[in-house]
Amino acid sequence: MRRPYLNLIVLICTFAFLNVARAQSAFPEPDVDGVVAQAYNLKNTLIVSTTEKTLYREGDGVAVALTHIIGQATVSDQQIERICSILETAFTYPQLIVNPRNRNPDVTLLLLESAKLRSSNPIVRDKLDVLRSHLISIYKKDK
Image (tube, rainbow, N blue to C red; front, side, top):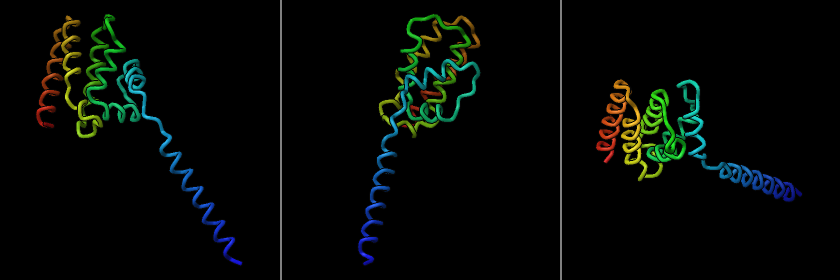
């Protein structure tokens, strides 16, 4: 007599487990270009934690996304400083970068060099040099 109830409970638990497992795997990977665009277009320098988490995992992929966003457009010194902030965030925890190829800051270094050529402000150019040196040292340590 208890057997049907036990079978029913097991069946319900199984369906509940499968639904939870399916829901957890249904979370899509974040749209890196969208997250980087959101961080780039913020009016203030505060980056929200969900954006930070995505940036931490992408490394050099962030520089690729920034080049798509910026293209050949003219950028101000304030935008260049914003780019530096985003790139610095992307390499804050190199051990969290998911794709091993994105741990190498090749595109990031090219983007920093391009930004340096676009800026005439010596303070911004110095910030770019400091960030460039910092990223190179991080990459050498990570190797």
